[in-house]
Every structure is written in C-alpha cells, then in structure tokens.
Image (tube, rainbow over all chains, first blue to last red; front, side):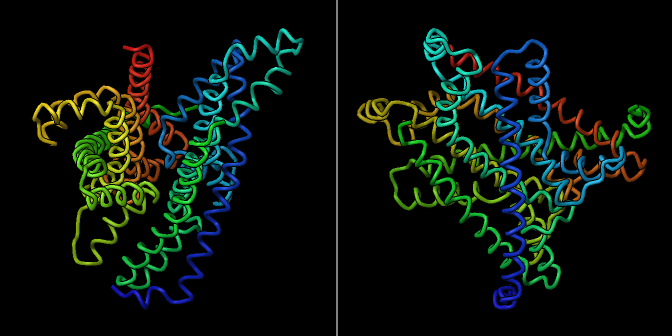
Amino acid sequence: MDFIGAYTPGHLTFLLEGFWITLQVAFLSIVFSFAIAIIVGVLRYAHIPVVSRVLAILVELIRNLPLLLIIFFTYFALPEIGIKLDKFYAAILALVIFEAAMLSEIVRSGLTSVEKGQIEAARSSGLNYVQTLWHIILPQALRRMVPPIVSQFISLLKDTSLAVVIALPELMNHAQIINGRNVNFVIPTFLLVAVMYFVVNYALSVIAKRLENKPA
Amino acid sequence: MIDFSILFSHGDMYLEGFGNTLKASLLALVGSLILGTIFAIFRISPIRPLNWIGAAYVEFVRNIPLILVVFLFFVGLPAIGIRLNPFVAGTMGLTVYTAAFIAETIRAGIQAVPRGQTEAARSSGLTYLQTMRYVILPQAIKVVIPPMGNQFINLVKNSSVLGVIAGLDLMYFGDLVAADTFVTFDVYIFVGLFYLILTLPLSAFVGYLERRLANGR
C-alpha cells in the first residue's frame, strides 16, 4: 500500500473532478425523476381508469429490475432502435427511469397519507378536484415526502457509481483509472473514495433524520 | 419485433446465469442475515464499545456504493495478496453490503418490542442472551419479515453487479449473449424477464405480508 503515492495533488483533483460529475448526474437525475414522479404519482392517486392501471404496471416492472440492466439498456440497446445518447445522458436517462418509478411510489403514499376529511372539507367548500389536489392535498403530502425523498437521493447518489460500466467519467471510474497505474494505490484510493461518498451521504442522512423528527 | 429464437439458441447461457444469480442471492441472504443479526445485537447491547462498532459498520456501509464494496473484495484484496474468484468476491461484497441494511431492519424490529418485555424477562431470572433468544427475537421477527422481504428483492437486483466483475451471473451471461448475437435490445429484454421471474412474485408476496400486518394480522 502506497498512501503517499496514491494521494498526490494530481490524483486528488482527478478524484474531485470525478465526484463533481457524480454530483451533477445525481442532481440532474433527481430533478427530472421527481418531476416525472409527481405526475405519475398524482395520476395513479387520481384513479383514472386505464391510465392509472398502466402506470401501476410500468412502475412495478421498473422497480423490480436491476438498475444496472437499465443502464446497459439505455447505453447499448437504445442505439439499435436509433436512439444514440452519449454516456452522460444515457446514465441520466437510466437513473431517471429507475428513480422516477421509485419516487412515484413515495409520492403516491404521501398523497394517500392525507386524511380523507381534508378532501371532503375542500370539496364541500366549493373547490373542484384539481384545486383540491393542488392547494390542499399536494402541499401537505409534499411535506411528508421530504424525508423518504432525501433517503432516495442517497441511494441515487450511490447508484450513479454503476455508470462505471459504461465508463462515465464519474468518481468510481476515476478511482479505477488511478488504480490501473499501480497496484499499491488500490486500497488507499478506494478508502478515500469511500470516505468521499460517506461524508456526503452521511450528512444527507442526518438531515433526513432531522426532518423526520420535526413534526410536520 | 422481438426475436425469440435467441432464447432457444442461447437458453443454456441464460439458465446458467439465472441459476448463479439465484445462488449468489441465496448465499448472500444467509450470510447477511447472520452478519446483520450480529451487528444488530451489537447496536442494542448494553456494552458501549460494541454499540460503537455496530453503529460504525451500519452507518459506513450503508452510505457507500455497493459496487465499491464489491471492488474492494475483487480488486482491493488481490492488491494485498488475497485472490478470490469473481463469484466468491461478488457474493462476499453483496453479503457485507446487505448485512448493514439487515442489521438496521432487525434493530428497528427489536426496538419495536416494548421495554417491559425485557424487564419482565430479566426479572424472571433470564440472562441477557436468553432474553434475546426466547423473548425479544421471536416477537421482533413478525415486524421484521416484510422489510426483510424487500431487502431480499433488493439483493436479487443488486446481485447484477456480479456482471461487472465477470461473476457468471445473469447480467454477465446476458452481456455474453449480446456480444454473440449482436442484438443487444432483445437480449437485454430477456435478461429483464428473467430478473422479473424472481422479483415480481417476491414483491407480490411482500405486499401481501405488509397488508396483513397493517390489518393487525
């Protein structure tokens, strides 16, 4: 093990550059997947005859597939039907598909957790269904969704490392490049990378716990 | 259209991968149940240093990516002279990773059992270990089973990382078939179907258990 050789300023900047890509991919994915999840979650909550059913099946299928397979699919299989994406967008697309399915479940259970009396009260005060959903149910549900969404973001941040299989230049990929230079760098590099993931994710999990304990 | 002839020409590869995915998942499940229970007991034990070890393990492992854990076994250990075959390295990585989540699930289950139960058992003369074994754990198991089922579904899906280190699982054989037939799209659809054969029934079962528990059994 060669800690001094592994932790040169050059290597450290290289790892931070990788981490920056990791964070970008994670952030863009959570934003897009949350937007989709809200739409899917609301459509499923609203019990629209065919739409809700189809979405339920789609969500169930995606949630039960390995993310790694979805990444392979968006990067290697989609070009076969004419959709060619570069690594960065293929990774984001795969993460968005997977996370949107996961988050839509959180959104849906958040919506269902709002008491029925709230809906009845809103409807009897003359709000229509959409107004009730928008002004009464969603704001309350969103507050309850925050802690599980933060935990989901932690998994997302960890899952970006799977994009190492399509050589996306994120943190894991940069670690592997450094490891390729000298066997003695392997353990020091992995330890440092683990600490980098840990620091960010642990901070997020502390925030999630804080939010959970705060009465909504 | 999807070319089903791939299933016939390469069925044996799919099946071998499927078998290994199942094997890795089951081995890792058993391993992580044992390891997870140990760490859960550490976390709630009255001995302070054990608490710290348990908490450190759970918090550290839960907050790093699975693939990093697997790489530590597959790339990290050889760097200090310990060489494992990819399947073993992958399964060990999965075990260590999943154990952290299982420890957390079990701890939550144990803490869901009212304190009075422990006090009553201890005052009747049972030792700490006997209290755990005969009073607390049997009650905790009921609460713990549905989330444990979810962990197992995750484990099956997560076992696909073996594909990255040539661990002979479904994902790995899927890649081989894709390289062999040049029809990536269809090949991956079939890989997905094989995963769903395992995960969909499991998730339906977990859903059933959750509903039963919610209805007060």
